[in-house]
Length: 277
Image (tube, rainbow, N blue to C red; front, side, top):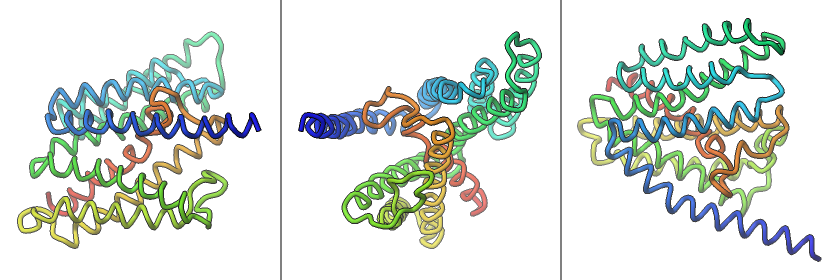
């Protein structure tokens, strides 16, 4: 009975912490996205540094070269803020040079393929993922609107997928990677995400994205968000960890909270460019 009560208390505590973190974190993030510029860069930079720490800690068995991962993410974000897509790519490429150099100088060497490969993976995943959030906010047409739309769509899809899965979920989506996700949850999250995108962009349909483009964007965001979530689940499964951190209480770490956005932001950026904006 004591064990059952303890488990129930833990679930309640996690639920409360998720609500509190969401109540504080969501307005803060949206406020800094609204301001844009160096305000948003500061938020993304802090999130990126924390995320790299979580990744390096999670991937410790692969011996990632932490200084190269940190440098690659910082340079990619600085490049995205100051010079756009090309400079972001150039900043990230420093990870290769630093990774090879540090691997050659390391006294206790893990296999180079694992050490350098995991370093580049972490730098690309975090640096490009967060860098595209900055690029979205710097688009020439409706940058504030599209950034808000992406964030709210990802948040709505994740929230409704979780709620729907808890209420009526029966069929596992990817039992090997993430046993808690269900097809019912995916459908619930997809409907919510596409609806949010439709509503957010409806008033701009005559001069920005048309209705059909908004619906396509919503669908792509949902698919990319799910892929990002499952990608992180695959990494955590390989590394045998439950959460990447405890900084955000019941939400886990920064990577646990931002995993969907790291894929969805990039997908949104290129799709909007493909639509001619």
